[in-house]
Length: 84
Image 1: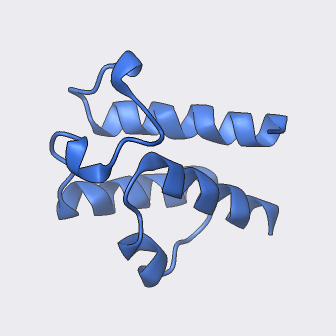
Image 2: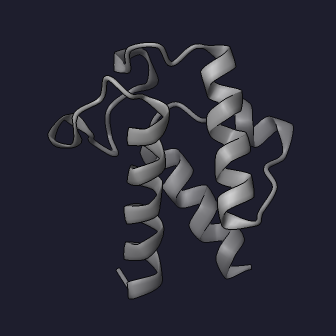
């Protein structure tokens, strides 16, 4: 993994911790499924997507947004868009 990917993952984790205020840093896991996050409902999903689009200066397609089921999915998507 290169430095850019590490930075993306660090920034992504920070945004998750900001969005899910009950989430403790040591409970964050890129493989943790969406259903295991307290309060990850459709509204929070769109807030998270909006925050990430703004922060990383990218935009997600609707089908990509629907397919996000864990933080790893977002990390891969962001890396792909930033490397495009």
